Length: 321
Length: 278
Image 1 (cartoon, rainbow over the protein chains, first blue to last red):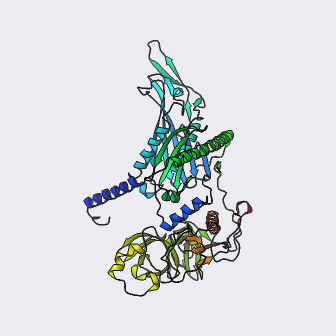
Image 2: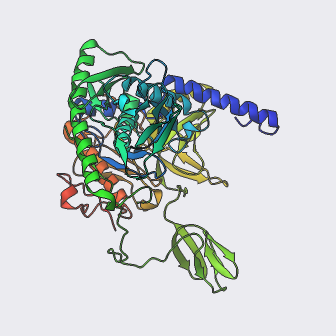
Image 3: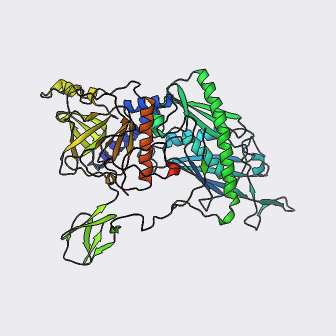
C-alpha cells in the first residue's frame, strides 16, 4: 500500500484497505498463522501418522506448562500461564453491582479477551478483535451451566447487590493452542481470587449499608473444583493431536474443542476449522479429550496447591525472571 | 500420555568464568569503550563527550586503530558467497521475494534460477508466467548470495545443482550470529539426517536421501512417504538438540567433528556429531 502515501486522505484510504485485508484473512482462519511449504506440511502429517511430532512428543503429550498466580497486584486474582511459547495473563477483578433480572440471587462472570499486538503483528489495531470475541464467546459457553462456579456464593443481597467477576484475558504470545492455555489460566486466576467479605447492615429506616471488614485478609475464596478446562484436538491426517503448535495447526483442517471438568464430564463441545469430521472421529476425539482433560486437571490442582503451600514467602518470578 | 506442569523458576545469571578461552569485552548501548581519542570509530560506536560510546550490545573488536562493536543478536547482514535458507514471501514480475531474517526481503531473480533439466537459455515470457509453478509463497529454498545492494538488500542465486527448492524436513531458526562462516554448509550426519546450516540462522534438517539425484537441480520436491522412521526420528532429534543448544546460549555452530556435549539428563538416546563450541 505505498501509493497514495503522500496526502492525508490517501493514507487513511490505504490504512482502511489494509484493515479490510486483515479482516478477510481473519474470516478464513482466525488464529495467528505461520506460512509453511507443502513439503513441510506433508512431513508433519507423515510424522504424526507414526506418533512422531516435530518436537518429539507423542500425539497426546502436552508441552511443559508453567503456572504462576498472583502476578498482578491490583487485581482480586491473577495468573500467568506459559505453554511452550504461548503466554497468557489473566486478571480477575471483583466489583459490586446489581444482579441480572432473571437470576436475582446470583452473581455472574464477565469475560473480556484482549489479543495484544505483542503476540503477532496481525493483531495490531482492530485485527485481534475477531479472535478475542470468539474466545470470549467460547468462555461464556463453557461457564454457562449451574455447576462450574458457585454463583450463589457471589450474592450479597438478592435483587440488590452481588459480586460481578470481571475476567480479563491478555494474550502476550501466541504459539498455538490458545484455548487450552486460556482455560488453564482462567482456572488458576479464579483459584487465586480473593473477594473481600462484606456484611449488609440494615437501618431502622430500611436503607441498607454495606460494610467491608477491616481485616484485609478476611475474604471468601471460590471453589474451582468444577471449573472446566478446554482440550483442543486437531485432526492431522488420520490421527488427532493434543496441544498443536502453530505449524501443526496449519496442517490441520478441522479441530474439536472439548470442555471437560475434573471428573471427566463434558460441558460443551465445539468444532472449528473448514474441514469436516467423521462422527466416529468425533467420538474418538471426545474420548481422548476426556482422558487427557482428567490428567490436565489433576496436574493443575497439584501445582496450584503446591504454590499455595509455599505461602507468602514464595519467591515471585513475574515478568523479569 | 505425558503432562508436565510446574512453577516458574527464575533464570540463574551466567557466572563470568563459564569455560571461555578468551575474555570478550562486552558492552551495552551507552557504555564507554575508551576515552583515548586516537582511535577511528567503526560500526556500532559513536563519539560523545570526547569518549567513544557503544550504540549496540555486543563485543568490542579492535583492528589496529579501528574500533567497532559487533552485535551479538542482530538481523542477518548478507555477504557475497553466503549460503542462506529462505522462504518465498512474494512472487513478483521476473523475481521472487525471499524472507531471510534480514532487514529487507532478499531478492531471487528469475534469471538467477536454474531451469529444470539444467538447460541454459534466455528466460522468455512463458517462463515469467510459469514462475508460480517453480516456487510458490511459503516454499523453502537454499541459495547463495550473489550481490548485496546499496540499501543492504541481498540478491540470491540458485545456479548450482545443490541449491534449489527444499523438500521434506524441519526448519530450525537460531540467531544469525551463531552460525560461523566455513567451507561447506551442507552436512550429512551419521545418524541418517542431513543438515544445511544457513548463514542467516535458518537451519534445515532433513532425512538423508538414499540416492543422490544429480540432474534434478532441486525442483522435484519428493512428496511421498519417503520418511523412513529412523531418518525422521534422526532429523527430529537433531532439531531438538539444536534448539536446546541455542536456548542454553552455547555459542557458534560449525563443522562436524566433536560430539554435541549435552548433559546426560537431557540427552536423547543418540547424539548427532554436530560440534558446538562454547
